[in-house]
Image (tube, rainbow, N blue to C red):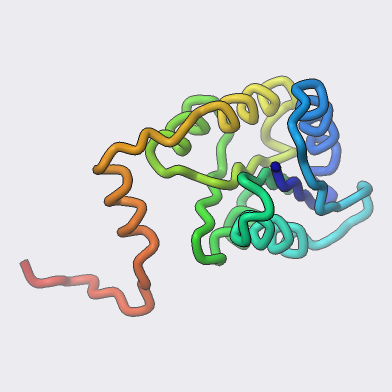
Amino acid sequence: MIALGCDHGGYELKQEIIKYLEEHNLEYTDFGCDSLESTDYPIYAKRVAIAVQSGDCDKGILICGTGIGISITANKFKGIRAALCSDCFSAEATRLHNNANILAMGGRVVGPGLAVKIVDTFLNTPFSEEERHIRRIKQMEEDTDIVDVNPEV
């Protein structure tokens, strides 16, 4: 199950992604928004992040005007690795190396044709399961409340 969410800046692109998902018989839950009327992206980022975090959905796709704000919001949730991608190479690499579970895109940055290819790449690239990538993901998920900017060697 794929969780979808967008603000007004990503609404039109989300419609293209829905077409792709339906053509490929991929199940999804649409957490909004439902129009071009101005709205706040954190609402939808939170809904999708919670759906992925809880395991109700396997992956998520978030879209706002640039993809920046919506990905920053999603990444505040423990266990969420939202990656902002504007090309297929990044979408593939973030799945292989980071086991990203949410794809973020900018509706005002990426056109519909490329967006569909990015989504296809993201959804169909498995995590590599390589030890070095598992180790790095564990390091990413460590608490980082206090950071020593000059650690002793």
